[in-house]
Length: 372
Image (tube, rainbow, N blue to C red):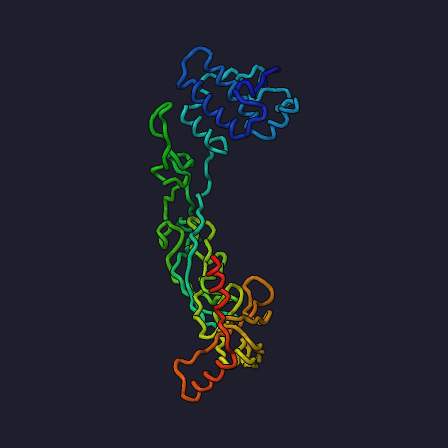
């Protein structure tokens, strides 16, 4: 590193620039001054300075040391030899092709990484559904599920290669998984046509799986459904999904629950609600009524003058709440059961009641409306 060199100035960025800004600046200048595309005098030296600056500032640890005023390379050039900031007297041919430089810029590893093992791929997540009764959802259950999936090949143990052999580094892309098209600034990369981007080739595929490393089969499990599941709850079975490609990790299996509705108990968030019919007489005079619970029955007091839709709550006597301790509540909503027709005796009783319970309950709203 040349003494007095300002790497920030070389890249044209502020000392407070983010790592992303530094990378963007380097990409722009590397394209502009690379010797493959810029034949102007001084372009090569400029490119060397840009490369050295990015080698320091592009590494957060080296950048911190540089900012503190210390030598990142212990007093020697990062390229070995002198301290002039050049690449040890290297010619433009030593930089490789421009497409390689650009490939290195966008490669977080910073170089031509060669794969010595096949590129693995995580298996896909799978989803299946089970139908539960209302009671099973409350108490939990163990239910069987079947799912069509891929499993690792038992012959090659997922490698895809015949036993006794192994995948080889792709001879076309040298394990990078990509190959370049075009020349100079117009070079672009695409997945390797030989290995399809994996970086390896299987010269002697497994006879059982044909080189894929996995086989299609029907998997059967017995799934423990926890208490408190609802319609649409998702239960994750880690590692029970599709097998990964070329020995990659498996995906997960998600079991979605469908719960048969109860004729009595209706879900309302974390709570359950029961509709309790009461008679006009019970609503007027009060009563003690029997109501169902999840474990039997209970007596509830209906207060005199109870209105239609009044709710009473029993704390903690509802369904278990999935993933939480304790239960929800039971809500009892009183609805006044109105007869569709009256007997002569009932009609007479209503008329008698109307004589003692006189008055117009609508008088207040009529007065308020008239006041406008």
